[in-house]
Length: 488
Length: 96
Figure 1 (cartoon, chains in turn green, orange):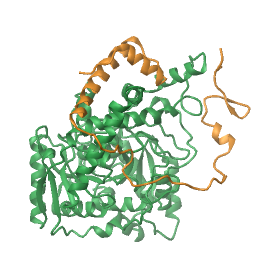
Figure 2 (figure 1 turned 90 degrees about the vertical axis):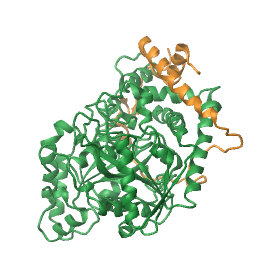
Figure 3 (figure 1 turned 120 degrees about the horizontal axis):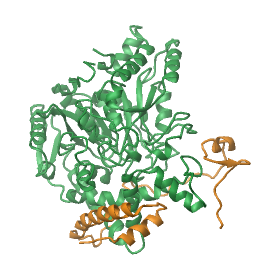
């Protein structure tokens, strides 16, 4: 049994009672990374020297009181870390070794004394659903390394599933936390848009991006969110609201909880074993005293199209900053400045990133703006209205996180539209800005995890967590571990 | 069905400051045509009178006082730069 089979709360008690030290926890991380990461490839950069010296420093303190005292964490590589290489898994930033500041979420983790073990692999600039778009080595699924871990926060999910860190941070623009959490059998939350500061998150689609935690349990997830949530004057879209103590909402009581199940989320295209796992989860909720009814999200089928127009348009503007002037890799071949922009970007960006920049540039270009970009934004309004209407009557929306369990490496990479369709159940949540979590709810006959998605009202993470925790406590899916590198 | 020509793809690449090969131009023509045709399904929906959503929260312009404060030094700003000289970013010639 690994120390990482304990919750943060249990480890806090062990540290307090001097049963273990912070150095033991950091050792557990690096030992496990050495054991499995040449197969999983969850990490792009390790920060071992700093982590070990910080562990010693914490071990020398009398006071162990901080919400994440000594807890080993991994950070997705699109979240900037002062003095620690931040690449977004792009060749363009492969030498960005010395970022000048910490993202607000990293500052908040540091303030609560967690320890950054390293930076986690991802699809380049968070564009992808399989981690195959990492320009370094793609991450593999710890449950079966022939399969993808999902994306774009594939490294964040795989590192937690494989027991390399106790929690990680990811980012979610169209499902990039929840989909890999589902594929790797861990808990991943995309908070309400505006709950967590985006300052220091390398922007992909600014109206959709949110940072959130990936953990083994709902309780740990709620605890990390308590630390990273909150208003930040450095992010003008961050909401100025009081942050509840989410862990206090984990009562196990869902009596009277009203669940909406969109018929579109169990329709054709959703794999039978996924559908069965979700229906079984609904039976668990019934046994706990909750009720569910079928509803409709009539515009959800248009979400993928609207999403790719909106997110690619925003990306084409956001990625204009990568020009080879202030940071990143500059092409050696350029003769003049415009040529330098073009050559640096063309040499530094991978195919998917170029495809999305081109799609976005096209959708925003003269003559097409109204037909594509503005049309997509109007459809976004209708998708948001669908959710608003359901939440007038129901407390949460429940369905699968993904239509299928993890797919094989190489299976979808040559067809962008097939890859995009994989996010059909997670994308509407980003367009509406509401919170969504993925928790383990079973396994396919091939032994691959299946994720249950629970969606809540704006800023009602407390109810999402309460529902997720009640299910988790009534089942044992979250206690299963991948067998990679032996039990962990 | 919407389709995009190779010339349009090359024009868009130039706008986006990307240099693409002939082979890439053909590939992106196929991919972008497929994605744009897929996006045409949005035309099935009547959106007359629907306000576009640019942002899901009810936030208005967030203002703060324009006060100078310490952020980073010139040396720090330059330390990740591919090239710099005399305390400034250096780029290839702008004028021919």
